[in-house]
Every structure is written in structure tokens, then in C-alpha cells.
Length: 363
Ligand code: NAD
Image 1 (cartoon, rainbow, N blue to C red):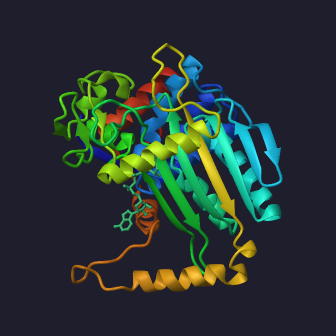
Image 2: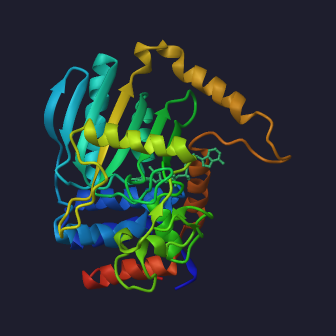
Image 3: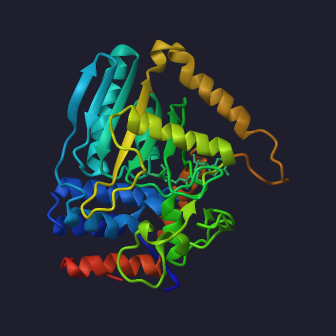
């Protein structure tokens, strides 16, 4: 363990795609998974990047995740739909569900789309960006069926998943503005990154069964020297929500909107039988600004965002960032300098590649 390397993002995406092809996914789906995971690394969310490869492969092999799926329409009307993701890759089901909602919103002005049983949808900002780049406002609430690892405010038992929320808006003459965060103090993958020897967790990110606050990822994964895929079910503790009672309430509402309302499953209770389904539920609301503020919306956004960005920083020389700006800056830097990966993460990915007969990229 220990140490860090950098790898070109094209090389990494291609390598990941080849791993999924070797696991019998078709070329297009494999490429989507590669690009999406590396896209999360480029955005600086290593928690949702290629670190997920061993777990996705394990899910494919156990049948939790299914190749080559599409969305099934359970019910629909002019401005709403209920979709089933058939345990397909989030990187396949996600764009299909978003584009389905956007088409409805374009016609009706607004669309509400419930999606259940999608494979891991990764960085939710990717779906918000897709909508905002098409000129729409998007709001996403997400949960993880069978994925409870967050204790509610005041509790120690795993009741919620890390339940992300994303709001994305188009802006005139610039990239979309994308707010996208987990409702846990840190995303689970950040605990994975810390467990792999990467950036340590902030104090109090976790809570032990005795109620004691901690930053030790072993509370999620059990002993960190265990080889193979790191699963958060092995430890005795839980992550904590961000923002104390407020974040805890938002995480609770993600369960209600992304699971109870979509017809999916809540994050708890966790079904521990082999082959249990770990899937994302997502309630998405799409709004076409043309039906609300009209053509001036994107300019109004840009004007206000400009004011906020230019406002006086707390520290001399500091910056006030807009939602999505940190990701964009990191992306520009990593495209130039390569994607940093912990040695432990690389070893776990290359172990999977070797087992599937995929040649490693040249040094
Ligand atoms: P985070 O804590 O880094 O917060 C990210 C948000 O804060 C972004 O909108 C970012 O632009 C903004 N931000 C960051 N620094 C800022 C600054 N200095 N000033 C102003 N704004 C700033 O993200 P996170 O909570 O660790 O989530 C990471 C990712 O994990 C997200 O992409 C999320 O969608 C994803 N996630 C996915 C699932 C799933 O089940 N699919 C579950 C949990 C999280």
C-alpha cells in the first residue's frame, strides 16, 4: 500500500473499457462505463471513478448488475413517467432515463421521472450536466436500495445510503452550474479512497456502534489489510450525515422520493442474501426554462452567478466558487497532468484485469 501514480485519462478509459469487454459487455456499453468512471476521476470525485471497477465486476459476476439492459416504462403521462432500470449499468440506464425525461419536459414544460432498479448511477452531476447542457433545469434525488451505511442524526444504526442530491441549471455563455453532493458527511467512495491510503477522512465522518465519532474507514470495511473487493458491510460502524439534523432530514427525504415514490426499495433494511440487489433509485424533475422565465433565464443565471463569483472572499486572495466550479478546475488540471490513482486502487484494478486476461497499459 501507499504511493500514487498518474495516468492519462484516455489510456485509463480505454483500459477500463477493455476490462468490461473482457467481462462480456458489448463495446458501446464498455466504452460508456470507462468514460463515465474516468469522468468522475477527472471531476475530482475519485470515490466514483475507476476505484469502482472491482466492485462493478463482482456485481456483474454475481448477477447483481446486468449487461445490455434498457429502461422499461412502467407507466407514463404527458409530464411524468415511472421507469424500471432492470439492474442495468447506471452508465447505460442513466442517459436513457435522462433523455426520456428531457423529451417530455421539452413538450410539456416540466417532467417528473421516477427511476427504480438502476445499476450504480455514479456521479449524479453527470446526469444533471446532460440535462443542463440541453438547456433544462434538473433536480435529482437519489437513494441506494440495500445500501444503508449512514446513521440518522442522533442514531448509530445504518438507515440511509449516502443519498446524493443534484441541481443543475444552464447558464448563458458558460458551462452549466451543477450542485451535486452526497448527504453523508463524505461519500462512501471517499472512505474507500481513505482506506486505500488516499486522502484521510475528516474527523467525525463516522460513528461507531458505541456512539463514538471517528475518522477510521475500518468502521465501514473491517480490517483494511483484507485482500479483494472492499465491501462496506464488513465494519461495525456507520457514516454520518452532513449538516447534522438538516442533512439527516434531506437523506431521509431522498429515501421517500427516490424509493417510496419511485416504487423502488429503501436503503434499509439491508438484504444480506447473496445476489441481493444493490441499485440506485432516482426521482428527477426536469423544467424547461422557456415555460417559466422564458428566454432570459440563462442570462439571469449568468448575471447572478457572476455577482456571487465576484463577491469578496473571506480570506484575502481567496476565491468564492460556484457549484460545479471545483470539478471543472480539477478536470482541466487532470486532463493536462493525468489522473492520480493510489497504488492500492491500481493494484486492485490490475488484479481484476489480469484475471480477465486484459493486458495492462504500457508504463
Ligand atoms: P463534495 O463534498 O465534494 O461536494 C461537491 C459539491 O460541492 C459540488 O457541487 C461542488 O461544485 C461543490 N463545491 C466543492 N467545493 C466547493 C467550494 N469550495 N465552494 C463552493 N462549492 C464547492 O461531494 P460529495 O458529497 O463527496 O459527492 C461526491 C460524488 O458522489 C457526487 O458526484 C455524488 O453524486 C456522488 N454520489 C453518488 C452516489 C450514488 O449512489 N450514485 C451516492 C453518493 C454520492
